[in-house]
Length: 137
Image 1 (cartoon, rainbow, N blue to C red):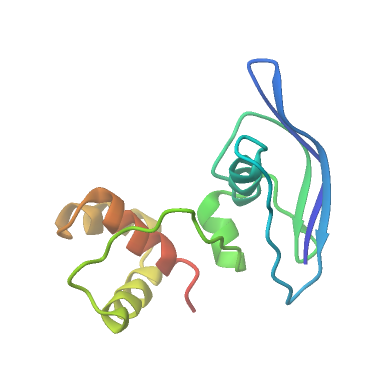
Image 2 (cartoon, helix red, strand yellow; image 1 turned 30 degrees about the vertical axis):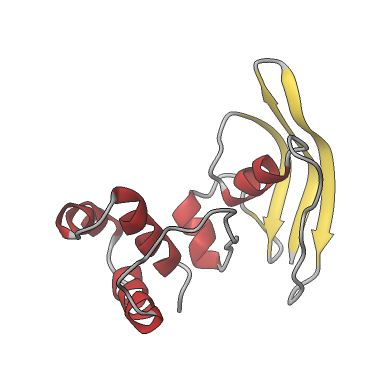
């Protein structure tokens, strides 16, 4: 279950998210919809731990307070989101992508710098592969 209590986020005294409350039961999929600039991506990024700063309120996942968890720790709990734009993996099959993701998911975090240095492809593609691997079990 994902539970958000009074989540607010400000940038330069400008309120981006204002006391958001949300509860998504376990085994449910939800979508956040709204016009451009409504804060959809910001909400997702705050929930996933991609944005730090002037954040107030609480975020719970599986009844555990996750406010202080790093991105990779949230991913290992099973949190993931579908980004608006996906990296282009031209020349790689779906099976190769999944195999690569599983391979790097088991690496210690201090090994990822080595992996990034020696994998070919753009940094964005490499990070997308490695990042998705963190949530594949």
